Amino acid sequence: MVNKNRLVIFGNGIDLALGLKTRYSDFILHYTIERMIEVVEDGEYQLDEEGKRESLKFKEFQFSASSLKFPEKNFLSTIQSFTADLSRFSDVDKLITELNALNIFFRGSKFFRRILKHALWCDMERTYYETLDKLFDDNKGVNGGSEYQYSAITSLNIEFDRIKSELEIYIRKEQDNIFKLLIQKEFFRSLVSSLCDDFDGREEDIICLNFNYTDTMRVALVNTNYEKIKTINIHGSVDTKDNPIVFGYGDDTDSSYSKLEDSNNSEYLRHFKSFRYSQNNNYEQLLEFINRRIPFDVCIVGHSCGLSDRTMLKAIFENECCEDIYIYHHKKGKEAKEAHFFKDINISRHFDDKLLKRARVRSFDPKLIIPSGE
View 1 (tube, rainbow, N blue to C red):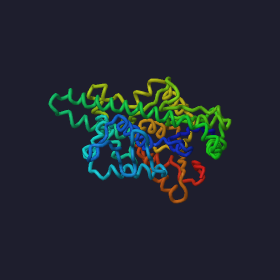
View 2: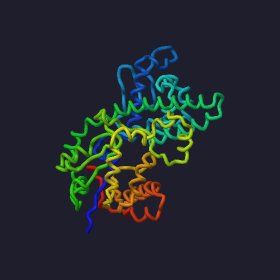
View 3: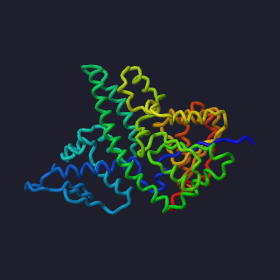
View 4: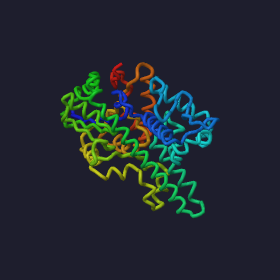
């Protein structure tokens, strides 16, 4: 029997299973509340009919300069309630007209308005790319031509940089909870065991490819005496300046990408991940591993396999040495099978050869579980 290597791909589902609030929607809600509090504390809020000061009231939410009252509900219902208020308006511009204080809150960011409209499901990286593509097309024929186009995209990139900085601050605070949560949730050991104990090779022949900005799995591996297993933080880490976070879009095979590249303007490609990967050797380490001419399996644990990372995932899944792709799940029963079904669809988008995809993606296995502690 030929020994195989193993590549474990970790996504945000790991942090969520641990109890960290690292969804984009978590960040969006947090950022929204922070900005609205600023509006109130700066005195930029509406007056009542008698001209007296009045807190900015938003249905179940009430913001004031001295305190913040927040409904005691689980997080999902909280954000659903919040975004339900926004959906009463056909678009965010009408909302801003209704609550003029939000003009200051948004700081003129059309990009963030677009994110907020779809806060529950928004993929900020995909939204950025769609916005970039639209600005490129909408402004190429405007008076001033390329100058107007350049100005619009530069403004978008400035907005994206601002949100990236805020996201990094938010994730860093969540990261501080990792040690406490790992101690509280011993069940997390079962995940590490399922990935490592049944592996026929050496620990040195397993690599964890971490797409998160946190260090959850590296800490978990050390705590379970698997410190020899290497972790590549492919998207950077909030813990080190030497490996800054990579936040942007990663599908340079998309049909719209070529027009951005052919424009001969580097600003249009500022937030494409492929150019950020060259700032360190993380990607080189990944390529060295998958190009060893040794068969390897892939375990997908908590990663959506969305288009934002298409180029990299395509390189892994279609590599001639990749043999089997296993999908881990955190649902139960029918929900687990349905989650596997949709993940299978996402994975398929990274294959040009669909027969190859069918040969490599393994069928649903109820034993491949991401623990939740429930």
